[in-house]
Image (cartoon, rainbow, N blue to C red):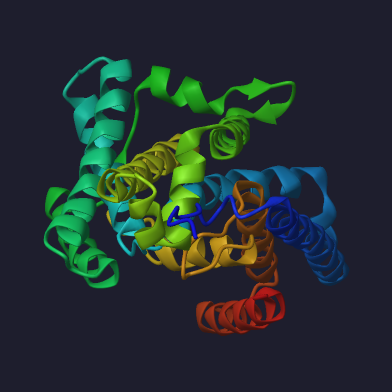
Length: 322
């Protein structure tokens, strides 16, 4: 008998077809859910179905869509990251300060991405090198990053730099750039996920880390890269949020991590790792934003908005968990 360990993702074309078919059906279900949500809120609020509101939903979804892709990479690798919103908050108050120093805008944006990668790398180091479960590790760093953000500025920080404003306030064929950028980033992420070894390696490690290690993969490096990339996506999300609002706030993305995880699950991700879809995660983020926007448009007070959001999330995820 052969002692060769078969890669968990390469067990045969039949298994591959089953996974692909499951993902395709999930995408169909998400689109049907989006149509149902649009119909419901369009009935309750006629403005909801206007083109202008669709653009507003797209702008609002930009942060969640990008952050959710980062969460998707982490979750498929078999880990979790609760510090996503805190990293966004930290960078949303750091970037205006860097701009106020008079630094060149390309340098500021590059530095913001590097800071996001560093935050993710710290999460990876604590989880992988110090052997702290990622749930606990990122729960701790979430508090640290949030505290640093509040220490930097507990007040809103406005960006007045015209070059930064123009970078996000212009349009391409009538579509705001704050919508175009996440779409382009999603397409790139899909191509990397489907057609590069990195995507295969992440799924392999998440499916069965021990088998992946026996198969010759450096699981430490792969997971560490996943954490760093999640930080990069959080940084990009923070930049998109600043581009949309021109204002940084330490608690601007409070709760984002939970919405990002929900988007991944809606898109077909599995908390145990090994399974997920970038397109599904993107659509899940859009669906959640449509729900949140529709509830806000009903004019309910904040407490009822939270109650209804939570109830809808539980129902939708329960219906689509398989």
